[in-house]
Length: 442
Image (cartoon, rainbow, N blue to C red):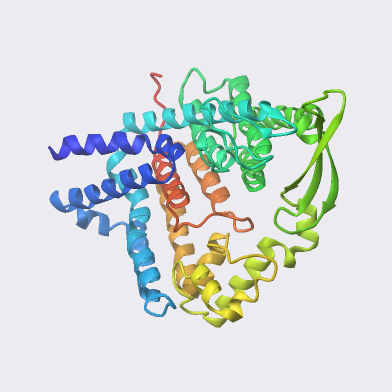
């Protein structure tokens, strides 16, 4: 019965990338029940002692205990203790992926296949929505009938969530790992290039700047270190760049407007969209739209941009509570109910979190949590390097981790369901990938 349950949970974990498309609820149910089963499994078979011997496991538990410890000093102790306690379900995802659910090579390879197929599907679906555009209404329905409620932003199959670029760039290189693990595709430069350039193109048109930038960074690093695949990566950058140039030149979204005002504020670029009138196609009508601010405007006036005010407030909270921080998931609470901090948000309402992983740990957990989190990441990298898998898969794993935890970028909150599950599931897959070897019979 236990071994049958193990297999069931292995296949449920295999489908987490699919469940992530449906929203946060289903993947959270799967990982929570899977983690509970994993705990029971290791105690039942008396293997918990084997886990405790592993440095990666010990640093995981130490980091989790630090979250609970600093909650003693938090402003809203209920928020902090509650979110710290249940955060363990995320931290245990990589451990149970590696030691339990994906220890079978066949199942692990099937998980890579699922990722590869879903990345292609999300790319095609999102690009279809990109082509389904009118100047008056913006992007229309995707293949599944979902329509974006945000003018000028793509949602793909994620309903109202603006995350298709993040999804494909986080999982895309794992799909690439699947491609090069298949012997007949391992040296197929054209197939590699088409796949990677498709992700590059769709991440660009999605409007998710960080997703596009980090994927580009990942390709650049792979080009330097992934010997044997430099032609594929270089060609994908050339093809992707060419298609990006063509869509910006030809697609009306980039050409059917004029800028009226450009500021650094949230939705701070005001544009006038031009389109044929409904009642008279020979006449030109227009509408005023507020969209994301120009990147250069944000950089020039960073302190008064949305991210600037959030980061400055976060650092102030840290400086006032340098050792233990303000408490996990206390950022919005403190911003709303402390007038001094609230007044620092001059142009915006209080955000739900600091929008950067490291700044969030610093503000909410202080020096203690930030240092232990960095140690946690170091031990993951160390664990990957010591694994016996093929070098190319280790490199891909490390590049994925580097781009996911690149410090100078805006991010979601690891405390939140979708972002937390996605991040720690990918960590688990990367650790599994680092012991992976090509099957010569593929």
